[in-house]
Length: 407
Image (cartoon, rainbow, N blue to C red; front, top):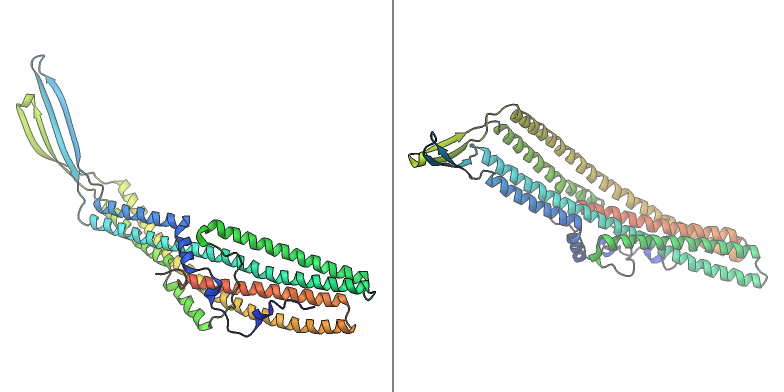
């Protein structure tokens, strides 16, 4: 009985596959990211921020027209038409326009970086679903190979029983092993279908192949992992967004402090009284007198600016943690995969001896089936470890913007 021979080339010493060979085409990925609702919404918010910045630049200071008309009667005698009209506009005091432009500019920076970070998060979601699919597919291949070999084993034992060279108990043992292998195959097939359905729903434009792609062998230099970890911090849009938000809130605090002195409203007034006997024109000026309300708003803005500075520092901590965790996970996942490959090789060596012993009559069928099961488990563990190592490497590459994300 030859178990998993179709999987052995995966454990050979040939040159490892490049990482991109286990990933979808970049053009399809970029199109799928552009079409995802989260990314579309984020860029719509960016357009809203640009419009808001333009509004802040112009300011809410518009001309206001006011007028009245009335008829006046003097002592029950002659009636007179009277009217007055006023055209007024508020004006920003010096320095406020500059602060408004700063607030708008920083708001655009925040929205731009949040849009890029939303794209980043969707990219991680795509990679997660992709490797769920690849991992389940790799285990499905191991399970399918096991089913075929157990079917051959059962057929061989049944022939020996018919020749009175094996007992019914051995047939039952072989049948039980086959049933368990079929159960595991059904499970891995179900997981592969589940992962594929998630990909198809979230990223309809990805155009998945009919066959699950092979998971490449993890192959990346340790120095490269460290380099990518540094790039996670350097290229973080989350940090840039926090910095821009901190600057925006600081400008908003300065604006609120400046607004404690209210903007004046200046207008031109024309009037006519007693049917035109009295006419005049003048300038009207009004200035609100600031009180406790404006002071409270300024204090609120100052506290919000302090909170934004703290959140900026928190963003740095979080991104640094992500970078360190990405590198650490990639390293231990690669190491675990290497050990799993060694386990497969050792189990295959032991299985060859069990098979020889069974042929010579020194090993009974139960021990041989146990050995077959241990090899089957070793191949499944290797497939999962390989997929998890590639998942960790791909996440690090995405977080560093080395894959699918361009700055």
